[in-house]
Structures are given as structure tokens and as C-alpha cells.
Length: 158
Image (cartoon, rainbow, N blue to C red; front, side, top):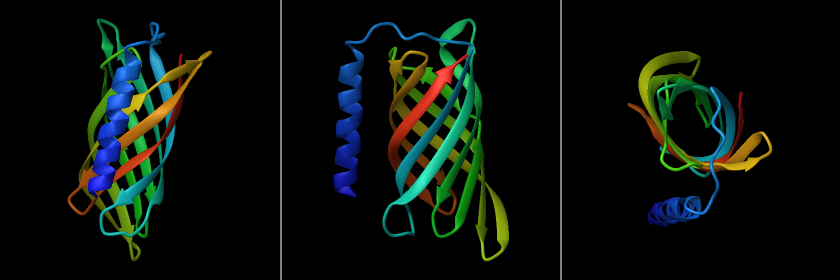
């Protein structure tokens, strides 16, 4: 766990330093993004695959802020789906922090439970024409478990 925390700290700092040397990011009204990651889920062993998708709307009078809806799936031993309402903030032109409450749907032994959850993620975006891509680190939690993941994010504005 100490090694993972060190890696997370290192990656976030590298992204913050790199963000200081890039040109202006092209903001659009809406942002549609997807991400794929490997995650460590509490109560499981090894790394499990994860997937998320979100749709965000940039706030007109607050250019650095976005609000929207997101979906996440952790493919661990028990099925974990989450719907969240992220609020995004552009820390720099390329570094975005998203935080949001939500609900998780956890299914185990044919029983599905709806519980409150939360999600935090940090994305560093590089632009390639109209597409932006970059690394993502995320943390999700509910009353039963938590996960931390590192992966790749891709999206576009429209």
C-alpha cells in the first residue's frame, strides 16, 4: 500500500509540473469521456479492470467548472456499478479534478443492494486534434468497500 501511495503522489506531482508548460486548452459546452483502469479493490486480491463514462456540461459564467453524470463499473468478484453526479474543476488548462456523490449497485449471490457512494478522480489531458487523452487516477468508496485505480482517459468536447 505504501508503494501505491508513493506512485500516486509521484504521478500527480509530475502532471502538475507538466501542466505549467502547455498552451491554452480548448473548452467546449459539453464533454463526453470514457476511461479504462486497473484498480485495487478492498477485500479482493490483485488488480481488477474498471470502466467509466461521463457527460459533463461546462458552466457558462464559471469557465473552470463542469457538472454532469457518470457511470462506473468495477469488474471484481462481486458486481459493482455506480451512478454519480460529478462536479469538475480545471485546476490548470490540462489538469481536471472531479468529485461527486452517487449510488452504487452491488450484486452478490443474486442480491442487489443500492448504497450511497462517492467518487474522486484526477485527469491530465493532452489534446490531439479534437480528442483529448491522458492518465487518470480515481478513488471510489461506499460503506462496503473502496477502490483506487490508475488508467487512461479519452474524450472530446462538443
